[in-house]
Length: 260
Ligand code: SF4
Image (cartoon, rainbow, N blue to C red):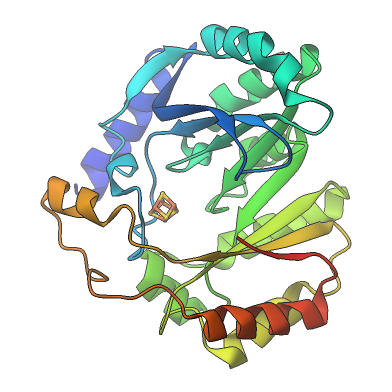
């Protein structure tokens, strides 16, 4: 898709069906994206093109289906007893910031019901609307995919500048953030960059937890289904040694590091 047609699709996403979110899928008892038991809403559309993406079918904004925000709130309210004290609703993707205005509304409605909100984002945007959404987010799950901008661009197609700005904004608000890092052999496992990444955030007071997410190939078949070249098709998951090395480096800088 060229830039112009992609901009038109983005406009359509947000102007049409203002009371509906475009989603890829829903998970009712998620335990991987934020604390406790959560309803996880995977939205459709993403402007990154990560080489290692295991949900490439969630990238195209033209895909997915619309669902009424009110219906999602009702589903969450019905599940509220299962959420317990820690759980709630997470919006992941795809990339949630593409539908930021709708999500501000969604999160406000969830808060009215006393439901905790998490946003799992690549932090591509840090404008006024994005910041308003972050302010309505109880825990921001921020994916910082590489600290070196040249490698970040090769890995995702875009700069890490905005993501780092989002982190700085979150820090300025004093609200909780979890950092996430996908460990991909030969792409994100260089010890010098792991040190630089961890050192960059080491003084952040809002970082409550750091998650290392080992690369896997569970979504490889989706690339074939989309008939798109998958450059990491032969890549292996990180070894036990490589995961331990990343864990050791991050643990020098953060108290709460979790290897997923
Ligand atoms: S940000 Fe997430 S959904 Fe978007 S391309 Fe990267 S891995 Fe895939």
